[in-house]
Length: 208
Image (cartoon, rainbow, N blue to C red; front, side, top):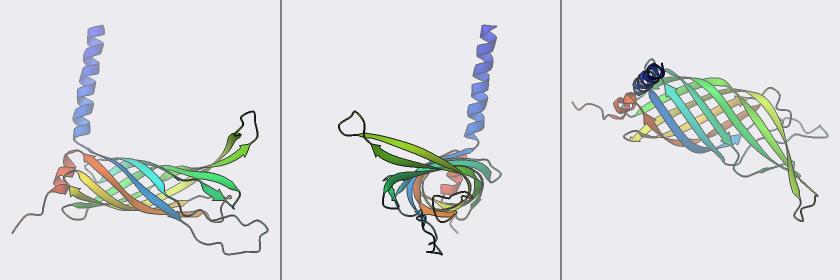
């Protein structure tokens, strides 16, 4: 029985590897920044600040099927802490999972359209007194649901290595810590594609 179980495990692994090699897997890392609309009123006693600026490192994993569809998972966070209304440090973190539609644009470029759901976690830091001479740092989290949409262009600069300018839009229905529910993020990533479809995308156009 043990030999039979091992044989099934080996066969399953071989089938998984064969299936994975027939698809395309993209791994990428990059950076971006955020932008949002300005506040449209100054009559409030407490005016929430805009969620914009800062450097956001990002990491993504994208799995594509031969039928132009796939799935994407991505995460990003603000590298340096922001200062919330000039009195409290905070750090936003974004993460999402998306359905992907991809299309060949040129011999070396592909375009991606994505839509999905995710979350925004805001980490607020506070320094408090304690037994440590340098003080202690506490933090609280606030997490919000996010509807995420994005578009990008992958340009294969060298073989399977690509450069990807990208634009993201997040709609956060309950983003009450900030004055707008609309957050835009734009930047670029560098990545690598695994799979046979990348080779076709990286070929030079035929000569006449």
